[in-house]
Image (tube, one colour):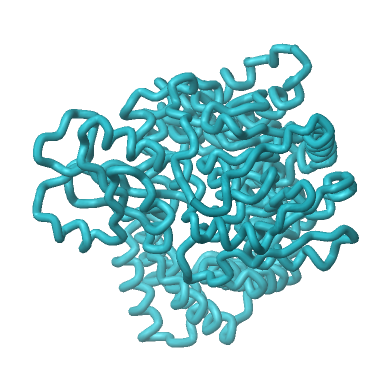
Length: 550
């Protein structure tokens, strides 16, 4: 333990620090150091101020300097926090290790080390450290909340809920706790509905209602907690109540790093436009662009002058949208002097009042070039029942997307079907999985250049396939937009647009959904897929393909 400072000037600076007057406190600490350059306490507090002001690299240097003068557990802990902030989690863990070695009852160091362990995927060690921290300070609502977040990530949802509820009991006005409780209740509700799918049993809606109430409570406590609005939106969107869902979903633009650059021009709110352009700005992932670009021709048919603003590599794929212009930069938009209004692409359904039963689902609304179709027809050939497969999303760093991924080995029941050819549509490092499985997967190497125009070869190759089987990624949306038969495998906690319990989707009439029976277990979904493929082959219902050339 560290004794309170006895230096009167340092005491005064520390009092200012505790009052939140960081600049005045820093001035006081610096004056102490000018008089006593070896004052480790002053250096520690200077490092702390640097951290609080966001100067994390300076925090590392200052904490290291303080340690060189007088090694203390609290300084090792602060150094660990500074390393964590600059992204060096291994050094952060080492700092917390030193702090705990010097002071085995240092609850804050256990909690901080648990956070770092969780971030590097050392979940069992993280949970053990949260429990140690809570044994030392059982009334820490932050530790209970962080413990809940870890348990949520590793799918121990009931335990996560109990941790969040303990945090809220300790601090009833903890908006983040109510928000996190809403998240786990929403996931528990989705799992209950997924388990009820196909049984004829109506799932209990109580957890969805409780999740909505938890988000509403969080918003009441902290009206600017935009994550809670998005969480509440997802409850409504999943349940098909899009009238309530889309207004809350507008808060997504204030959560996390921006997924698009907003324009300076006025937003479009659904009004008729006279002599003004309508610019639809793509956002989020490539699949979202493919899914929602369907609205651009619809609006053009209603008389709007529509432009889609998207990344350059998507321009050739979207160029087939009738009466729709494609731009790839704000500067390109400015070449037309006419005024414009704009809207993020994911906001269109809300502005248009779209509901699940009114989605414009005519397909295909994208197409591949006849020349590429002919080229891929020659390369793929006509023998066998040809299934294009895609098993990962490519977002290996994001736990949300990782849970959508399917191990390639889980597709073995499909490979065992007589006459089936599995043809890889997978991109990125996951394509290397092919050499690790015992069954044959053909490779096309479509769109091999990562800097080239996206999806043009993949779209053409799909036109020669009898079926596409994929996880929830852009390949699913591309196949659906092309009107190709597609089986999409969904985790139990699925994206809102797939709604609940359904094995079809109002977005794509040629798509069939196969949901997990249990979290992280794809065996049931893939077995049902194999049965469906066998039935398709035995019934001679191999879908017809377009001619290879016009």
